[in-house]
Length: 187
Image 1 (cartoon, rainbow, N blue to C red):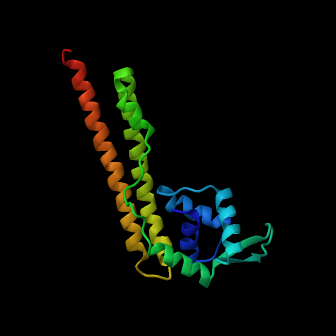
Image 2: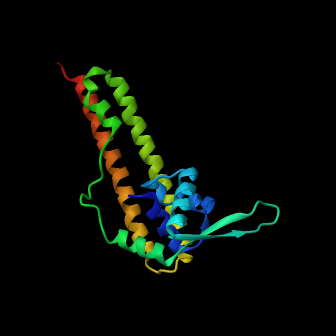
Image 3: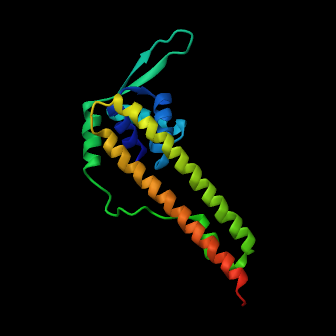
């Protein structure tokens, strides 16, 4: 996926500055596609050069002026075209450094591997907590949306996040049980 389409999709909801976009990213899309503020501004410049967004300068009292971006008709057409052409492979590409460590786990101490599995469980539990916070934010964003069914689709993406995090916890807990069992069995 290209960052530009995520930006166009967000701008379709409402006009925003780069800073506003970063805040929305951090509370929504960031869970499956992250972006730094510098990347967002770089993409906004590129999108404006293509005619997919336009910008206006808004004066602010006691703050520097801000540049607010809006999606253009050309941007809506580009977004719609991209949304209608799914990638040929729908599975998530996997490059997981932790799994490589597990694969070669016979070469490290079981205690270290147990520690890392416990760490993974804690991280996934924290992600689930974050997702619960996102659920509350969805209501606020959905109220400002021009399309009444947006929240339904947002919930579908969030559901995937919950399921993946829960599956990771279950897998790690089962691996911990196997490691503990292995310690008690004779070689």
